[in-house]
Amino acid sequence: MAQSSRRCYCSVPRCSSNKQKNPYLSFHDFPVDPNIRASWVRAIRRDEGPSFQIIRGSTFVCSQHFAPEDLSTSASGRIRIRQGVVPSRFHWNDWRSSQAPESVFILTKKRFGAAGQDDFQKMPDPGDCTEEGLLASVVAKDHDYACSLPGKLDTATRRIEELELQVLSLEMQIQQLTLKKKLPLIFRFCVTDEDFRYYTKFNSKEIFAVFWESVNPSASRLVYWSKAQRSAEETPSPQRKPPLIDELFMFLCRVAAGLQEKTLSSIFEVSLPTVSRIILTWTSYLYQVLGSLPLWMTREQVQATMPDKLKQCCPQVRVAVACTEIRCETARSKNHTTFKGLIGIAPCGIITFVSKLYRGSISDVEITGKSEILALLQPGDGVVGDEGFQIEKILSEVGATLIVPPLKKPTSKPPVKTQAVAGLRILVERAIRRVKEYHIWDGLVPLSLVGSVNQLWVVCCLMANYQGPLDLKGDKPV
Image (tube, rainbow, N blue to C red; front, side, top):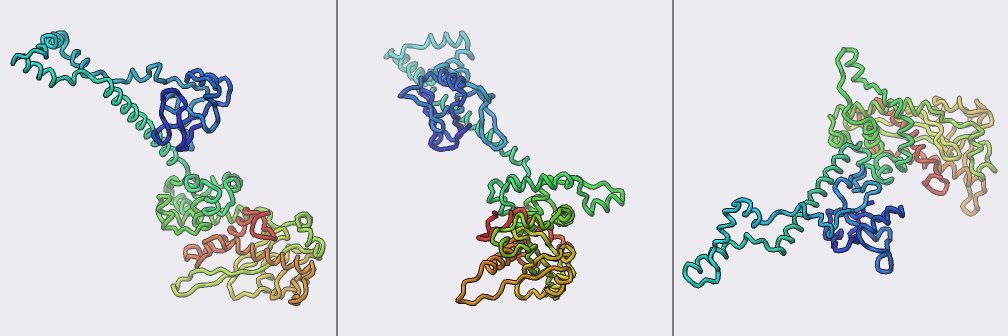
């Protein structure tokens, strides 16, 4: 594997290449296979012992000792050598001689042939002191560049070699850039797990890969609303320009990272209407796909994942609920409208219920009654809410009870039940905060998305579960 450290030195005798002096070269570790390693040691004419020890990560052979066809560039941009290749280009086998240019003297003899050689032989002796001899001597000295100097020729040859290696390095860089350009944008922007968290809100590349594999089969059959219109008019639709995975990346950049559509249009090199169409299509698609997954947990699942402290004092808890609001633009520039929704989480910290959005003037009792959560509750279930959640009456109609953290005295230590219920209330607030960390909710939802705001809200709530359940002691997944 090629090394990129600036402290790399070539271990071949009479080779003074190093990464700082020759940055266009790549440096390669000795092979792990003992047979191939022994072939390398024999090829470079060195013996392992006290004066030469092979240490992985410290002992290298530079790329100029390999034939060009033995080198290749991987998809990640690293320069690699073919399996089983042995270095073969060294000073002692005169591998540069075939590339060395002929001297001017040899070229002159070839050009003038025998006649030219006779002319050189007929030149007067430079030691002649006559006027004619001195003149001939001056002429001879004036043309002494025909006899090449070995030192200068070696310097020129080395310089030519360096330039050739630089050209080879630049060609490999061009190849790397070409390969990178063919990669989807998501893999050019998201290299580390931190990049994935910033652009997509998924904790790592592996988690995003799981999500992508679950939606890719059906996403490949997506039909855009404009395409459906054109099909009705019997007009062929143009082929998608971004790859399908980049369409999902564009949606996540808009929703999770909060990038504006104008910015996305420049990054993905598509028109602004195309950006809007892709975001609306993926909003509707993910709402259908994620909404079809079983979200509500059974009693057995709740019991199996419930924290021990809560299981001891409140085993009947099925869900903890809370309401939150978002704001959207209206046709009037100075006004905005508010929507309100209900979120429920299981005691383990997973979001298990998301209601539709309602006008902000609706009360907690009304939104609980209109949502479908009452149909999911069973007799004996406990619902955790805050003090202002006056839903005891409608819960009693389905046999469920409301559990509210009791008010504690400032001087007394809260009992275990109070701590457990209060901790679950905190988890609800953290779940809501996690959803609102999708930057699409930072300000007013733009007017272009108001028609899909309900779907967008549900999608963000369901995608938040891919970040893992919340921890009672912090925001890190358990």
